[in-house]
Image 1: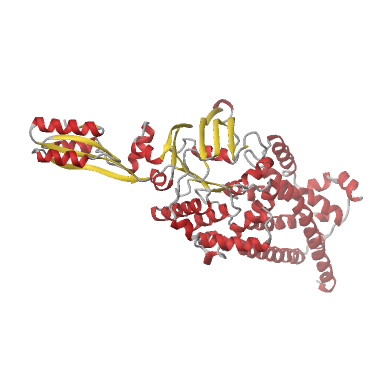
Image 2: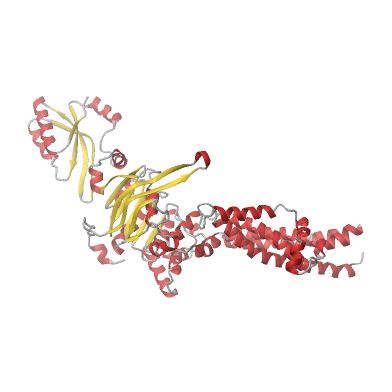
Amino acid sequence: MNWSVLGPQLLTAIGETLYMVALTMVIAGLIGLFFGVALYVTRPGNLYASRAVNTAINLVVNFVRPIPFIILLAALGPLTDAVVGTRLGQNAAIFAMSIAAVFAVARIVEQNLMSVDPGVVEAARSMGVSRPKIITTVILPEALGPLVLGYTFLVIGVTDMSAMAGAIGAGGLGDFALRLGYQRFNDQITWAAVAVIIVMVQLVQFFGNSMARKIMRR
Amino acid sequence: MSSAATATPRVRPGEDAEVIVRFEDAIKTFETGKGKLRREVTAVDGVTLSIRRGEIYGVIGYSGAGKSTLVRLINGLEPVTGGVVEVDGQRVDGRTEEQLAPIRREIGMIFQQFNLFTSRTVAGNVEYPLVRAGWSKDKRKARVEELLRFVGLSERAGNYPEQLSGGQKQRVGIARALAAQPKILLADESTSALDPETTQEVLNLLRRANREFGITVVLITHEMDVVRSIADRVAVMDSGRVVEEGPTARVFSAPETDTARKFVATVSHDEPDSEELSYLSEQSKGRLVVVDVREGVDVGSVLSAAAARGVQFQIVFGGVSVLQRQSFGSLTVDLTGERHEVDRTIDELSQLTTVKEVSA
């Protein structure tokens, strides 16, 4: 096996994966945070309780979430074309990954916000704090530890998605493992990609855990 | 701490004191359940009462009596379904969450479970309402220090809530509630999660806040002991209604309703219950009477005069308390002697106060 050729290719693949995952996490992380907060605050009895809005967002989330990503990637083709200008390559993949991840982020954010004691929200209301300020200065800080763990979990899910990006020519470690390893019956190359992914995921998990531990002071 | 405030005994707000919180036929209903199980629960059922500026007002009732809902009507955490709620001359009912904000800044609140921000330090918790109210950094720092000194937690400023005991958490809650200098402090079962000793600490702080800052305190509790230690006036709630209201000493010495009597009995067990009575009757050599003791009622003179006539008396049960400079309670006395002398003694006592014969 010729690692002098494969080595740089592996490095390129790592770079592609990191780029796709990072950008998707930023885009989906922010938009998903918004929808997650919206899901939470529109729940019955909460700050902006609204059955209509809550049901609508839930419906969209539940509609997109069960679609297997490899199918979504293909199905989003026309939309990707319209927004990104092409159906192929890294940016097309990031677009599709962001769409899929937004809804996962929204759910995770909603679930973690549910762990906030309603009593502290009531305390803030009793002080005459406005609702937007309650969200940004009470609810999000109170849930920060679990949120960090939630986002860490999502990085791993997005890494998983990025492995399928090869299907639309976006490269990455999944493409490396399938095209250079699997299709050439070279298990060593496949396992090299697996090893890199495992190390990446371990590192992300480690940093996520230690950050959450620091925030939650335990 | 101001020395002048501790040196002068506090003058209680009188009958003519200005009203700061007013309920008029306030109603609050909730809908619970879905579909066939859907029903309406009336938590507050036509309450009319006035709380005066500067007083400590107790609201007592069993859980589910509607007292926690009643207190939340004051700062609009729960909007009324019907009737009027007025705070310091301003209507609270019919306002949106945004319109309620300025009223809420005048009302501090403390909670049974303390509800401290776990993401902030002790100082951060106390500082938070000041940040929201737009105080400058220097003013905030000075105010936080002043309040932590007031509640005796200056050394704990940098600690997080989970490092504190329950009593300390509630003291932080009090400091936070007082931070923005509100006119009213709502205390919702503020001592129910605390042991008796810490309960007294917290009540002392509320009393001091009332005396030193003139803040009106509305205190919700199911413990009559709490009402007795600090409330000037008390409302007794049952099934959403105020069934009895008045100065604490009056409600204690002469409760008018069963609910009030039951609460009074939880703290002043001065009359024998049926089991104790049957034992006392067995032991009794003469006639057993329960004599009400009230301020200005001289039971002793009657009994010593009777003793001079050969009537012997034995106090077999009873208790007398002092509340707001008023004595009240009851004594169960076993009277023995010549029949007509005993009759005469009971007559003389009956002219002074309420006497109940309990011998079989």
